[in-house]
Length: 319
Ligand code: RIB
Ligand code: CA
Image 1 (cartoon, rainbow, N blue to C red):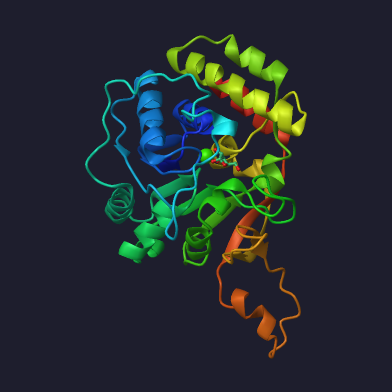
Image 2: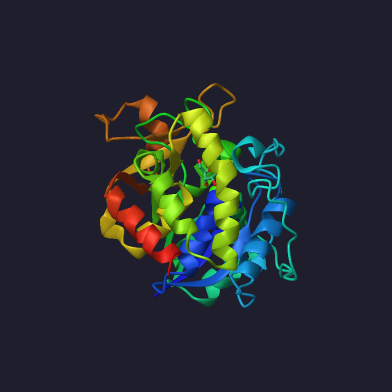
């Protein structure tokens, strides 16, 4: 059973991913760390507290994390996607739970050093907390079992801009640093999440299942679904964060290839783009390939058994 830290910026789809993980006995959630992203850190932390309260899981610690990227300021998030409250403008109170006093980066360091080679991290937002933890204690790269992150786009367009996926664009410097560290990483990016769609019919079936948590996630999902209808003209939503949970539950649902990745950090129209190097003819003098040389290979999910992912998701959310 994987010991899992979920690093998250709830976020409507983060809420469903948390519900998915909590319903999956393959995963033992040892903690949640929050990060700015979809909305500000105060709100993402309140949302995580609310979600765990609704799940009746006060035993799982929540450690509050970064309020802004490693360089620059928080630019306001995407309230037009997730609502001003990050939960579809349902504006529910946080409930009785409180975050622990340990900040997210120190919580990650503590857990990884306490449980060497046992901690997996599901990163569902900007990679700022991971970059800060790595900066504070580089040893964690030799002790963490695996990091699986929702983010990036290897061979397809972005969703935040034509170039970049939202989590990478929120903190490109953090992403480039994290993707250059020597720890096992898997990228669950738009190459597979844009092939995995939760239809309105499936959502309607899931909403028939009544529980305090499912009722809230389904209520929040209305706003998120409306965004997809307006923007992508689809009658459903892409499955972003829950795809990371599906990967942890059953890796055989995804086809991966391994390439070193650089993230565009220049302030240009491609900022935040994840660029894999496919092993171009790296002849000695290829100065142009210098940025990718000696970078670790990242497992990149490039294909998915999407129907099986949706079936697994529906099954777990309604049990
Ligand atoms: O691009 C999708 C990602 O950005 C998801 O993690 C969503 O929650 C937002 O954080
Ligand atoms: Ca997210």
